[in-house]
Length: 337
Image (cartoon, rainbow, N blue to C red; front, side, top):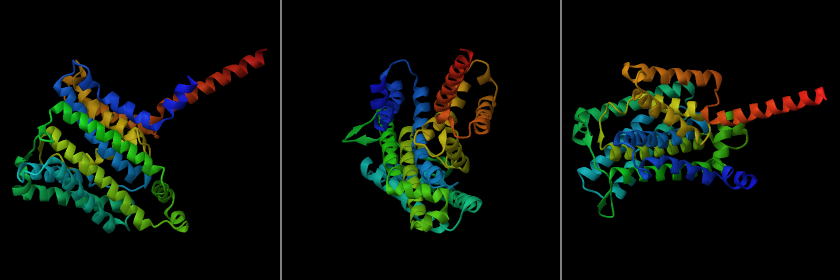
């Protein structure tokens, strides 16, 4: 048990690989429906976006209501480049991810002097402007009709839905490892210091401007990757997807799962995206319109009220409670003797 705890439970890389293995169960074992695989694909692309958003919110203390537009931008760029331009998927992937990355740098530079509600309002406005551009530029996005895409083509072979899903899971695991390295680097420590106190961070020689840009750029990059995964897995994109509600879901995902943790956004994605759909499939609850979404919202409120740290800390809380209970029982036995 000690060896297992030392080499597995404390090894972050093995933990992330285990998470990836659990997500691959629907394609490894038979019996799972196509709709369930589609649901899990939605969880994965949201987990990727949430992992990047956690760098912005959880580790640097900034908030954005425009990240859904970044996801939409990369989705449209990738669909246009692979469909209309006929570019290889790898090249279109780079351009599609680079677009929101550069826009995120620009937005970060503009919003670097804003905080709290002012930053949220500024990013909300920017996201809505970008969404309106998606509607008006119908030659590029298809407007309200939407834009079609196909499964990725790698080395001349068209991937299947299952293979595309596997690629998304691999990306998710690699990005979790990347964020782990970031958090434990000088950049990560600077972001956390900036979150705790900007004045103290400046006193230590940390450039607030630089690291706010870094946080915006990284989260925008991850949003771009998520958007590409979405459009080539769902194979369709329209402006109704990339709304402020999706950005709000990213915030809820990070907070409910565990703010400032790497695994929190993954758990949050399962709750925010997966739970309502699973409740819809239940015999009684699923037959009542709106109840699954309502129950999911109630669950989030309960979590925030009674376990504000997030769902990822529940196992640690249970272990701590059990340890206290055992110690209390031992003290009671000692007094009885």
